[in-house]
Length: 279
Image 1 (tube, rainbow, N blue to C red):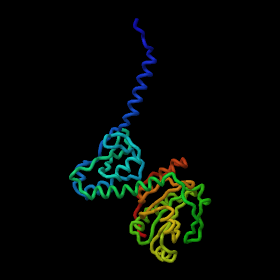
Image 2 (tube, one colour):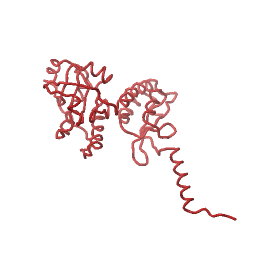
Image 3 (tube, helix red, strand yellow):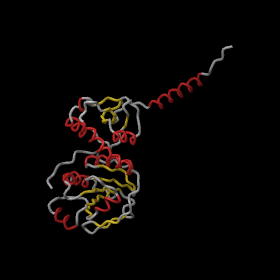
Image 4 (spheres, rainbow, N blue to C red):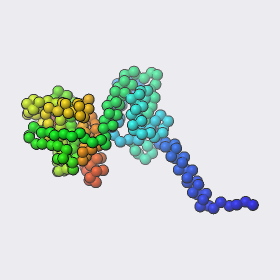
């Protein structure tokens, strides 16, 4: 005699099967914003695309060459290993996606070399996130002192730099704007660590305006404790924990905006182009 299965059980089974199917595939609808093959023909084409479209320090949906969502750690490791380039796209829910595309046989050899090197730095920064900031005791050029206890309830925006670093000095206007933007926030502190002596910094800063607190003679701390290899390097610390490490002022502003909203439940003004100014 034929037995009827309750409709409720059929529905539960169907939903369970659907859940398993979605969990296993973890695929994302994706549309690239350029032709992956076309930009590989010349290094200049690829570099212009990569510079204006790819920010691997950002939070994004990482997917492999088969459209499967993977961990960001795995995504960066594949770029370091070589053979891929990241291409930006938008998903059907408008989230930012980076997808791995295999390098073609005709791709400019310099492209792979550049991707591997830059991805190593991004991966190093990524591994620093959510780790404890080292013990420290700083004194800036104005005689103000900073240590772990003094910042335990604050967000610290830290810049690593030196006078002869052109890129470090070039971003001063954007960083000054950032200090002004969050100037009314007593829980945010802007500090910079420089490799140069106090005397050299005094002379330099007479001609160049920089709104961060400046701590001299920090070459050893940056190299041995923070393992900084590239300049500028920006580190956002919240309550003694490193939350983000980036290498440009534009990435810094976006990251700071997001962290402030998440940590302090504060509706910060959205990131906006910082005005260029003479310094």
